[in-house]
Picture 1 (tube, rainbow, N blue to C red):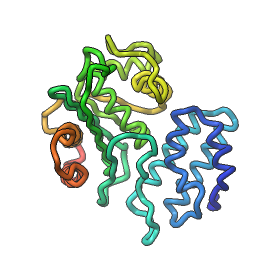
Picture 2 (picture 1 turned 90 degrees about the horizontal axis):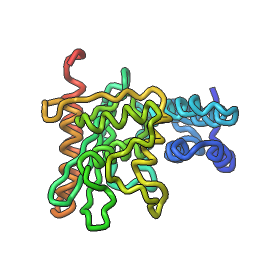
Picture 3 (picture 1 turned 135 degrees about the horizontal axis):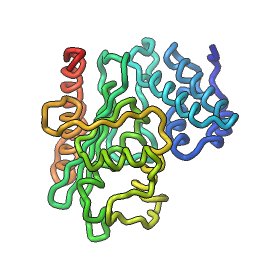
Picture 4 (picture 1 turned 60 degrees about the horizontal axis):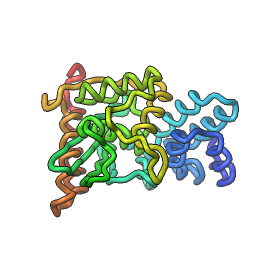
Length: 282
């Protein structure tokens, strides 16, 4: 097994071989790739990043993406050696909102499942995501007359929640959404129909590049192995309820003063404890 860390120049050369969506994911793993591994899980993440760059050098970008997914999973494990001080992806620089990871001996076998949701009320929006391995994030904002969303506000923000998840954490195995309209767009993008976007959504370039949903559509079209499923909202599904609550916290935090980060972490910990204690068939 390769255990030596990558040099900074070697890491930068590898980054240069990747397309934009993979660059963001690889940069989040820089700590694991360029510092001396502190435990077997860190070594595994380091090895996978190195192999991802090798695959990219041969033009095999799907394999590079799969190897980065393996690195992300090693980085998220809770079993890092004592004193390692890593364990868990850091928030990706440039990804807005609050992101965290709750401690717990969550099961890492089986598919990595994530849920996203949005909350909209009185021109204030909140979005949130949670994963079965304890990662969570939320973002809230108020809109003005320059808002580019268009008339399909709930739909667009449901999709923005998916974008937040993929940018901050990376690809899960299973993505759960409670909006059938959002599901139809995600499935269309997976089929390669990336020009299919919500009616009225402003397609003019933003200051930081393409519109979020344009970038998201292209990203989803390139993802390998992502299963997107519908779950009925407010039906008691634990991950969906957690994502819904995170979106509500994000929306309320725009106008109210409270510890949104602390509340989010406690909420996710509670929901995930129940999620991992449920019968396997649930």
